[in-house]
Image 1 (cartoon, rainbow, N blue to C red):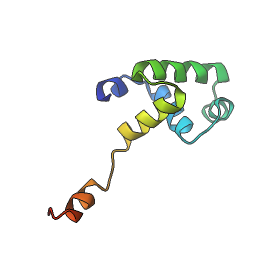
Image 2 (cartoon, helix red, strand yellow):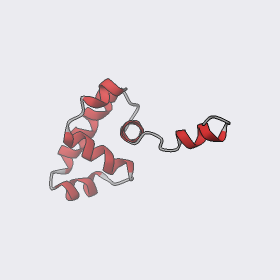
Image 3 (tube, rainbow, N blue to C red):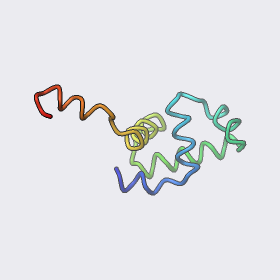
Image 4 (tube, rainbow, N blue to C red):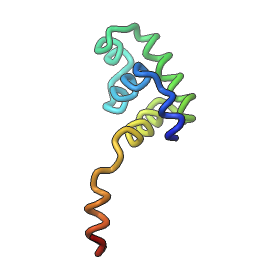
Length: 82
């Protein structure tokens, strides 16, 4: 996944960030100032690059790649590790 996610262009990433927040194609297009068809293309390409099942899955994969869990240290400390 890491190698695949690093192949995403800045536009792929922008589209996936907005898709993660459940924006529609039209909403993403309006926010980025591009055509809805272009958004659909970026999302389809991202699905292929990430080998995802669909746009929502791609957005979730990218989100977890981009925002790794911040609480792992706290979780480990809670299990008796320091």
